[in-house]
Length: 622
Image (cartoon, rainbow, N blue to C red; front, side, top):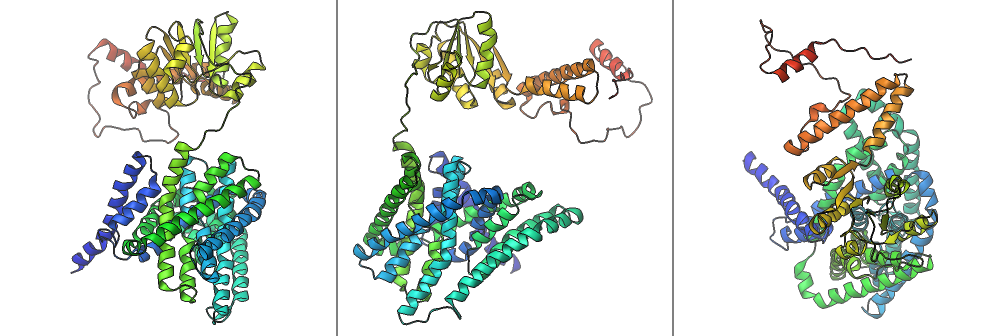
């Protein structure tokens, strides 16, 4: 009986994990993003799909912790000074966007949907609260979370998280005008607001005076697993405390992260929380997909489709206009409209409150929830369409000349820091050099220092021909990105095999790929400078300069040997040639041999003689 119960309990977990493992890589491969993959997988295995999961609401309550942990990680990156610097974006841009879009969507609900003012306002304000999980996840995948535009997006999300408190009070106010009482459960609304403010102050106080001493004590007395438990306790505890105060759990976690952002344990906390965050956030998207009632969509499909289109279009227009008014360029405004045009997870909280207070009936609550879920599912597709069809930013080419009919002995592709230095020995010896670069600002800047650099994308065959690759004796690939360098190498090897190919390697893995393509020469961009740096550190510590130079040569030799082994045996080969900073026991035989070893070849005899020699004393420091 116990075994059968265990199997029954494991089945939903296996279904969730399998759906994630299958759907997410597939959708990423198709370029649709992981969020849409999770939502689709949830719909397939949910109660309105194959029915492998029958209670998505229960899973949603657990999965919300993924959003909580995501906000905690963001908080760790947001130091108090940085958060203070964003105050205008939070309480200026964020507040204006929420109020303006709320008014627009309320008008849509009243005039297009025929809803009463209380129903239209609550439905609109729920849709205005964009999905923190969807937006931050997509910003993270695009690598834009830390950019100025990404920080403005996070600021808006923070204001929306704060807005849930007055919006819940607004639900109670509408309920009072509808014949209820101006209370939130058993307490007046003003008391709910006061409790929320007190909760914020309590979390701030605990973070300022308790958290650092707590982690210091745990780090001293506890083990690795206790530190992990303490990390989870802080995140979940702050979230729970804020929920008790009537605020969002995500806001509590965010505050805890901000308060720990300057802690010495910040990196450890981020490493501990990150795996849980990723897993639970995926579970959140799965549960949202499972919550979509396909039967309701089939019955009310006209109303739901019109609602999704009307709400998303109206909200996108409002966001675009506000972004321009706050001096964002049109490109940022367009992307923000695409990202924020959906409803979010806080809408479910607001709609549930409206249903319990009698502002919504069951049908309206279900339809509004379906509209929000479908908008969340459409957001990755809208962003994909934006990336594909949005007009590219116009770049001024004034004073910039495209590569055409160049005929020089050497072609240098990429004129950043590396390319500029590479050009100096060649120019010093009068070698004729053609320079092409894709960064227009870099071309203009180089012109101020006496360089004639042409505009050209080295990954295009026609540009390479126009740049003189067919007649160049040597082609130097000095671009920053390894994938770009690989593409150029592939083209040159196929179309211009006579030219000698010199390539800047990004790292060891890139160097191994270049070895396979048989380029004439490559160099890892950091290798030689790091060796010189290390050599001078030894000299600064008091070692003899000759010893430091010999040590650098030894490191270079060992690196070459390791690279040769990796070419044959894979990336992990030659690990024994690395010097680590962990002491490892010297292996000894179980039984000491009675006879001395005999060399079977001259090369082996040479190795044994070297091992028998006493070590040469190095010059002592000082």
